[in-house]
Length: 229
Length: 246
Image 1 (cartoon, one colour):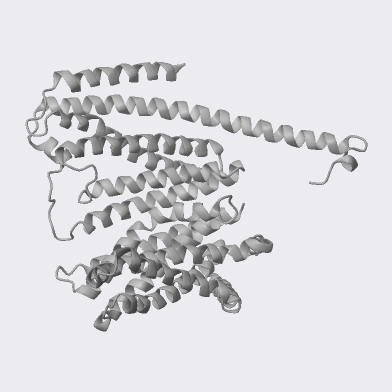
Image 2 (tube, rainbow over the protein chains, first blue to last red; image 1 turned 90 degrees about the horizontal axis):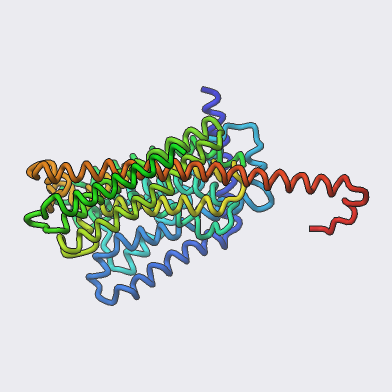
């Protein structure tokens, strides 16, 4: 029991460290958000100017922007560690490797949550989507999506951070893995905004939650092997 | 030596199954000759999936035992799996064009799943090529293989639901129709080719594994000789001093 508490304390300390360096670093986190917003703007050019077409595509575009921004976020969170050998130091600490994974994933999920939370209003404004009563399922999708993306992203960023061509390898390995997450999150968003005549929203949220649990468990179980290098 | 016998048997089986499927079995009433693609398509899709499952298990074995033979097996399985999966997709498109009228059918959940499977397999092979250290490469590859294998059922379910959660199949399932009302001769051709493909798969896997073991040995030899050369240079009188920096 006390071991669990100790692991939790380690995880929170690591997540807080990441959050502090993000907030003090400023430019990196802000530029990721700006990048995702530009992606949304370019989607508008690619599909516009028909307002109805943009509104129909909006859920998919929102989640693609979150995924693209998320790839940068995940890479950056490990890049910070890899510089100056901080990751090696972290691996040397006499703590459970799962706690280190949990800390990095927590920081990643928080960053994804901020990204998603800020992109939803951008989409609503750019593509004229009335959010209205849709905010609760939308929030659930963003939270579950952020956790799942961070669960996979932490493992894969840890895996690619010391590789050649990591800028290509992280998206290349991660995008097929998060395909079901993208699919489910888009479905929740579509049903939240456009109504849910078949009553399928709950099933998609469950799929998201199941994805999160499986990826967190396998990530925690394998992250130690990646740190050992 | 034994694998050579297996390879020979596999070759004969593929030739015999091809003759059987092309000339003995009649063409399908509705699909015509295109239906014959199914004889090679179904088997290669199954063997592709089997390969990735095997690779995940071998990766788990590596993480547990730290034995590079498991890694060699995982690597071989993914390489053979990518080959069979790509062949299955290609065969599916060759069948889909005359029967469905399109190469790519988004309504079929298995097509999207198989495409992602192929992407995961190619990613795995690229990851291996970009990692130099054998043990580092092995643990990275094992983790990627494991995550991919756990993701595949989720992909499968999500794509099936995606097509329509409360909606029955909108097209005729080729595998099911084969089982239901198709003459025994068609089933025999399918099973014959499946056996021949399984023999080929096993032969390729064994040969690739033997090759992977040889590659590992060469890597170790090269590393050892490098270490020895460095050691010799360091112990030689004045050698360490004359060594240029970097």
